[in-house]
Length: 387
Image 1: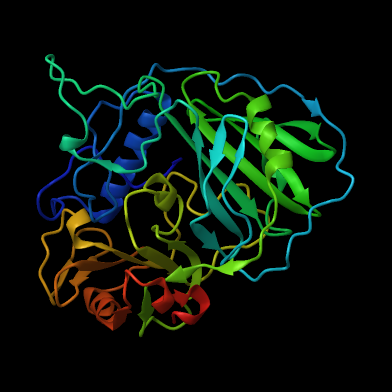
Image 2 (image 1 turned 90 degrees about the vertical axis):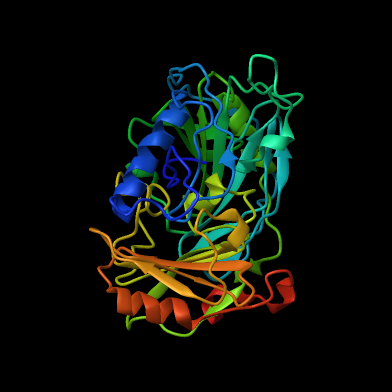
């Protein structure tokens, strides 16, 4: 969904070209993603992490648009009783999918030491968070594929809801924000680049939720986003889980961000329906858990310094040629990365680092990962118990 989905504009049938470092691949992907959010990306661009997803993510171009200036909204009255939010530990999910006007908030799939994130869909609009196979749509005589029924592929939409833990989010850091009151709650409206808008509100004492929407049109409006304020409700806390255990990490590395049925971070949201099993990022030092204005990695680099990320995905969903039971690493000009496949070649484990670790160290990490039954969530492990 937003910023920072390490995607690039071409899929290879084997490993990414070794003339480019992991950092260069990520940087190129972020530039492509920014163009996509503004509506400039060309159709057929492909989504990938370092391990590229097989097939292509449907990236249909839309008309570039200009974000509307923030408008102060005072809506409704304060609720008679405030919702009760549990004091859940980090790496917990504390709300579930819900609808609000034209918006469809999904179950959260990314959790961290400071927040949890869910994808948001908009009625009648295309969200490009899953691979599209050529067989899914007939080809017109002009060679172009029609949009899915009931959608308008010329107006792509991307959105996500971030629920911050108490004390984690600092609304004073919002650039160009306009303070407002919505249903009796403090709120701040702002524009985001490229071509989008954002609404932050205090859902509980010193605890903020933020919905970020990238769109080339005036929809959804701030009024549409405001419907989330009263629709968001707590649910019993459940831990984020991983389909693997990690036997070795360098000393000092602690879990920072994880994805359940998704990769960690905003890339997990951008590929929410891609079928990935899960992933986690460990870091040394760990990033701050207070004073945040956006999820980790929300900057031009798009990565967490001093981190090691572990991704587990179907081997069939990667452009890395499966080598059953084998490990293969790549040393490039930037940080190296390693892939390992289960004995049957069906599941791929990938480890990459921003901390300058050697190939030998990454090999030790990737070969220590014990994959559970990816099809049986009863075997999955809470993030804080996976290492």
